[in-house]
Amino acid sequence: MKNNDEDLIRHLSELRKRLILVAAWFAASFCGGLYLSPMILRYIKSRPGTVHIQWNVFSFTDGLFIYLRCALLFAVLLTLPLLLYHIWAFARPGLTAKEAKGTLSYVPVSFLLFLSGISFSYFLVFPMMLRFMEQMNQSIGAVETYGIDRYFSFLFNLVLPLGIAFEMPLVILFLTRLGLLTPDKLRSTRKYAYVTLAVAGSCISPPDFASHLSVTIPLLVLFEISVLISVNYYRRRGISAVPSSQT
Image 1 (cartoon, helix red, strand yellow):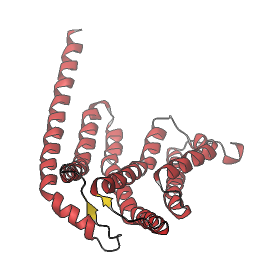
Image 2 (image 1 turned 45 degrees about the vertical axis):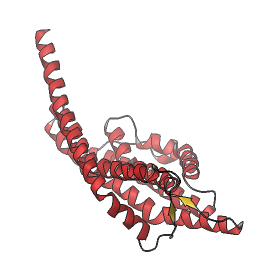
Image 3 (image 1 turned 90 degrees about the vertical axis):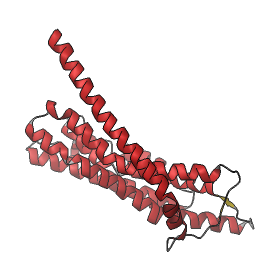
């Protein structure tokens, strides 16, 4: 009983140290984000190929909140790899050498997938949606006056969900390795997954057909990639699966 208590205290102490390191790095990254926010915001406003929209502020605090949001996103991006590494390092004593080596690759891959999702949504989907909204407003003769707070709320509501959605292949591979998912289960639920992803895509994108496809198709492709990754894992492990025609 005493040894169990000592092990628990040791694990909690280690967890505390790792959380302090991650929190300290997050705080430092946040401060760096506050310093770099003006340059980041100017780049976003003047980036070639984007829709040129005049930002307006409707309250004294709008600029401050945008600074904080920009710094927060910057800190999250820099802290995510370190957080994932410390999660892996904390769980490492309970893993075999092979499992530890295999799961370590999840750290950079997860960050790269998240970054890919953000880049895809910001450089491709976001400008397309802005152009659609601008054309729709002009078609009804509306005078366009956009607040900077609404602009970035729209941006974050699009970019962050797609960044998280790009983690789908890695999450499905992880669940497959745990035995919670199999290629057969993924194939049998394909039609339900398609409907769910189509609904999610329609919630993220504007109601025009082009924007809807620009979000939904990548989500469906990610699902199919996830199925292929799951099948490949089973083949490498020599695990037989039920043919798709029987599902």
